[in-house]
Length: 269
Image (cartoon, rainbow, N blue to C red):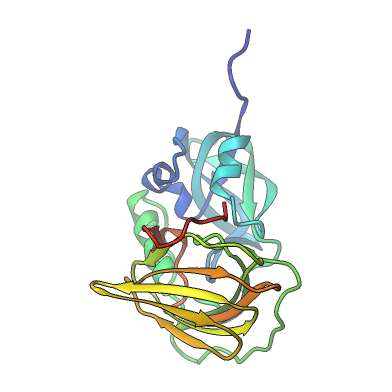
């Protein structure tokens, strides 16, 4: 007898442990169980990850999800990889579970205060031990990085992005749109961005209230996108359109962006 798609137990330690966040992604929170994994610690940079640490515990929720639902949650987040874990429920049952985490923990000094504050609220809501606040002093170390060869993931507007460096008050990433492609039109709830075009050609549409404008994009062009601004861009040249963007404060998560109506039909998925 066909009972439908098979589900697996998944241990969530970040924002997805919250029923409302899962529901906002169109995924039901089936068979919820409070649990923890031993010898792992919650590490928060731009996003959440688990890092190995002897004697530590990371708390979260175990839900029963189908593979299709897992793929839906992590679409555009290719940097996350499945990790098998043994989750122990608060009732003492040990569950083999799947956990999605980053191959490398966040770099020292990589912070996302808004994401961390959301995590504190969710941990408190579920009655888990509180998330420790990082000290403000000393200042984080300086760092050096190169643009990654492969993309980190897909941005809410549909463009490919490569994560660069971040500090407590801002982060940087490179965005890329293939020739002939048009992004989705989006607006950011609370973050602001400054873009600098590196290569390729295209156009960016921006709208604030009654003010509306389309700017030509070419190497050397710099644009600002204040919070709440509707914007959409497209690549019209023969090579990919590439730009670096500074996000202030650091990008808190994909729920920061909402799709809006723009002047062009998007071609990205």
